[in-house]
Length: 344
Image (cartoon, rainbow, N blue to C red):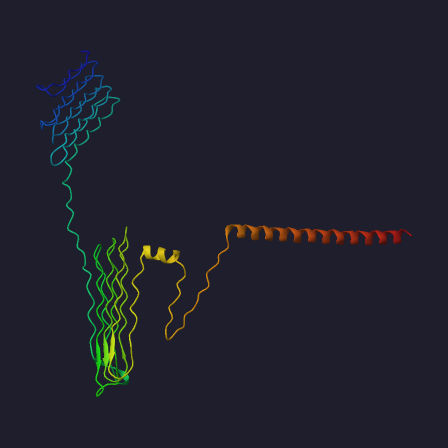
């Protein structure tokens, strides 16, 4: 008549019902995690009382249902928690509503069990674009004004992350025959490509095309610019510039273009800034020029100049105040004279 129901056991998983007059239903038995069995149902209450809680289910199994509440008043028991499964979480047990004549709430359904985590993802092999070298220039192409010319070498292409930039192509050669052309101009070398992201080395510039003439002028092509090093931690040095091609002539004059300077690196830039101003060497075209040293003011000189400016401003302010006082005194004296004349 009066009393709570007994809880479920491994042999009898369902909880016992409570007393007919007063008493709560017994809780259902919670199965072991690896058993795979459903949890026991909670016992029901009698006239007044709460239903028992459903037991938790094993691996992949549902939790037990909550017991019914009392007929007059009482809440239904909460459903049991579903067991964690190997492939998918089990469903939670549903709490049965209290079958009360006047008051009663249904029990809350149990949480479903968690599913097993998925396998770790496999990183695919990264695909990187190779840095391609530029195409060499064409040789002995008839140009304007009767010159034999070489075309410019192709530029290298930038590679993917961590891939060195492609080298520039060599300029085309030019060989002039006095019977067919007046002179020769070699093609310029192609530019090296920038290194890939991650500190890759920039490509080297292509060499200028050689030029040779039996009678007229022969001009070798300019070397291509080296590519910049790739961005990233401890980026490598840029590629070296191409070497200008030598010019050969039998009877005319010749000239060779200077090679392009290699790309500057962080270390070379610091060295260039800290070094003394360079003085260009004397040549037959440009005489030697003496560059005067750059004199920068010292910190003491800067402070002295600041104090001098401050003193000048203070003197100017004092002069202005004196002028204002004198002007005010003159105006006051004039006003007093006018007042005395008016009284007389």
